[in-house]
Amino acid sequence: MNRDEVDRVLGRLRDERDRITAGLLDLEAQQGYKLLKGAPLTGLTADRWAVIGDRMASLWRLFEAYGGVLARAEEIRARRGRPDQGQLAELEHLTRGPSIELATRIPLERRTLLGPSTERLSLDDVVARMTALYEEAARDIAEVDTAWSALLTRLDRASGTARAVEGMLDSLGPDPEYDRVKGELDGLRETVRTDPLSIGPGAFDGVDAALDALRSRLEEAARVRAEYDERLRRVEETIGLIRAAEDEARTVRDRVLAKIAAPMLPDLPDSSAALADRLAALGAVRGRWTDVAVRVARLEEAAASALDQARTTVATIAGLLERRDELRGRLDAYRAKAGRLGGLEDPELTALYQRAYDLLWTSPCDLRRSTAALAEYQRAIGDRK
Image 1 (cartoon, rainbow, N blue to C red):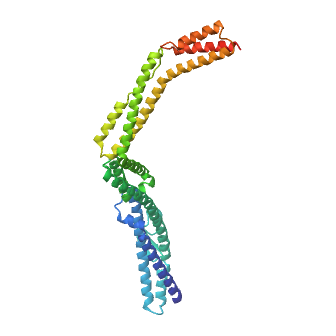
Image 2: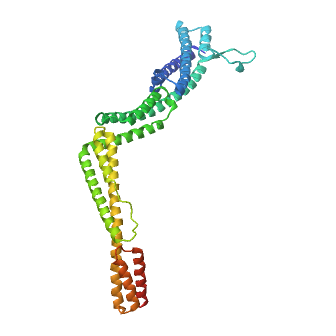
Image 3: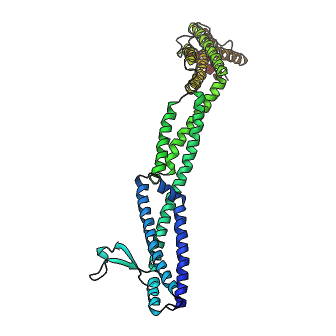
């Protein structure tokens, strides 16, 4: 190398050193690197940080060796404006030759019988090795940073929902479910802080679902609190309707037993008293609104179901009397038809009519036999066409 070549090489190396410095400082300024360096890591993330830390330490050691050789070359070049051949030879060795001896020893399996036990590299070799280490470290840091960012987003969202739930609990009273969910969220928060690589964003799905369900339940509790008196009034009115339907069912049942022979009757409804007791018991839990909301909703559902059942029972029992009246009406219609066909004087039709009539107008009425007698009378009329 002549003087001009030395100056060009030194200029390139100085520019390279500055760019390497900026690259290493930028890497250490990454949020993921800062989090890794400052967190009390455990598990998979601690293992990954150990690898990243080793790579970063190797990078700085190589860079310090690089900088030391470059500084020595600059110092030699600065001694004289026109360096002699000895200085030029030394500068060429420093800038292009194997001027850096690594402190690490070459593994035994990579040596030859006469080969060196330590490794010597040129500045270009050092830059190539630093480039590989930098890319590996940057990739690992980016992976951790991406994982951390995704987890922190989910953690922030879950924490926001938890704060909203806590605010609602302040006015609605405690809820044991929140303590369980809060404990699970705290555990996830600790894992995000110390070992983010061990979980994924999906780890928050259960907590999010539980918090959303809890918030919905608390919102319903707030609505129940605001509508408490009105909703209890409506439940009380429904219980009154149930009681009236139960009374009607008993009355209709007595009529059916007197007028219909061997009826198949459903059990009488009898839920109004129990529902009234549940309504009265709400006073004992008033103030614990999450509990009250559940009880009110269940009581409303039970009352609506009981009212439907009671009315259905009334309709079923009364239907037996309606069936008898329907058969009577059909008998009259068939007699009119028989008259149009000239069958009123027919002894057979008259006997069949009288038999059906006696069955239908006798108390208690046997609906099964009456239905069979009416069908026989109908067939006989049809035969006269």
